[in-house]
Image: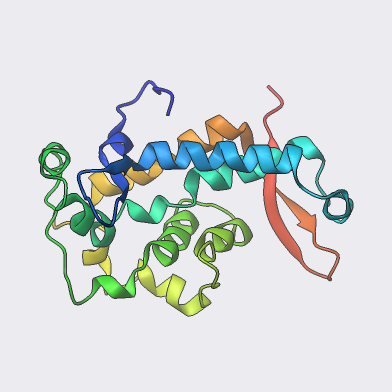
Length: 210
């Protein structure tokens, strides 16, 4: 991740660990950067022409959209339900993150906020169009049910899966930092409706003309 002017809180989170050796781990920001780069490559070098013809997007705008999605697809890992367990395997990284927040999670409740579901809920709270947020929700192969998404950050039922007591502002600032960085890296400056060809519309990115 390029260093933005604001503090890089997102750099403190882990994205993956080796299942057999937890000392081998990948920072979340690095996984997101790699994914965005692969998405860019696939669109520009691999996407079949037949698919391109059926999209109401020129190549530049399609590229910007998928790069944005690559950067935010695992934003749901910046939650207590995910970060608590994985950081507990990484003592030094955990200690650095605990300078800003406690990492005590609810073991019984965390299963109700899988990181894909959490990612869709977070993106909708940040103002991302539902259509794009739903791609993040489905990125492990199964779309989320709308009611489950809406329930995540309403009424306080699952808030212990998202932030530690008294530290809501910190976690929200991490989400916002990553979201803003994804917009910057992809060159997106807002959203526009796109007809899907099946009588419905989604919201996708519009490019920054500056």
